[in-house]
Image 1 (cartoon, rainbow, N blue to C red):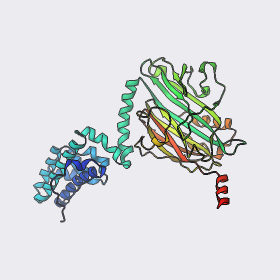
Image 2 (cartoon, rainbow, N blue to C red):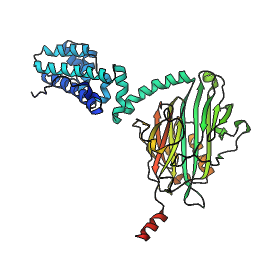
Image 3 (spheres, rainbow, N blue to C red):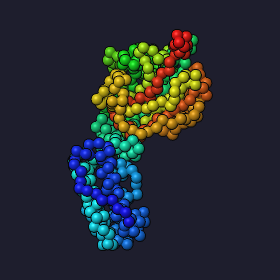
Image 4 (tube, one colour):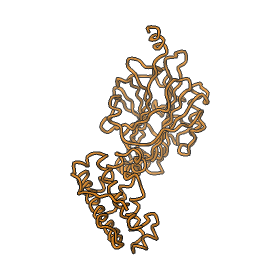
Length: 423
């Protein structure tokens, strides 16, 4: 039986990189695997192997499962304490395995404990730190962490909602081929106050690549009720009575708030909004814009967020868009393209294609969603089958953040023709 011999534990300075950490995790997995193989113990036969070693099934499984994964990032939170590993190793040692294999496990476990102490001081912090080191593991591990954050944020801020959603629409501008019309549909489903607080639900800004904001007229999807204070709500899809709204503004942004009302389910609100900006952005690159980006600001604790992009087939943008989760805690406002990559948060959620038209957009999380989409498309004066749809979802998204759907802008055909002529 071939075996791997381990030396003494490495210096703590070697644990400061993902590669250094995974090396230690794999060292422990390898040492236990070699020990089980040498003793003829099958780690996947939990009940039989535990009985054979005179151990409880739960104790054996806590140790054995480490040997059954190739992705130690995904299971690092399942590494049992030293005492559990020592009990299993002691039972296997009685089967006459070599002392070298026993020592390998001991050295590997000692190094694991030193690594935890060096990198994070305790196991809890270490397990929180690990998901960001492996993109393959972010969704599985981070979701449970984000769920705890959702509950904490609900308590801290006194609000929560079932679903936050945003649908972006992009179509060519009529009679202006270098421009595009942008529409958006957004809302909160089952928004609840856990205490009497006002809460912002809507804001709107448009920026160029230099981070400069500019004003655009927003055309509502339907006539705005006087009680809405200028907020472009779509009353058919809002809860009754309509939520009480107010607004405030800075130099560049107008914020709309839901006012304090009944708490809990008695004061649950659903609020849906929509608007259209005609000729709001260029279709091609220019001196101020190399990239297109659609931003959904997240400030409310929600169980899930759904972001859809419906793009007209005549627009020459490469799809699907890339999605980044942008840190709004240290970059609380505005738009700074050079900060996008520096301030993005780890996630491994993927954009999926929903096909053509709106049929694939149906979701039980948003009652009446297809009717909402069709209402916007009708207002745009388009055929729904002319759109391709893409979706990004995340459970328990962190706040404050911004979901940014981004894509490169193509070079204008006129520019290409000019360059070819020059050549």
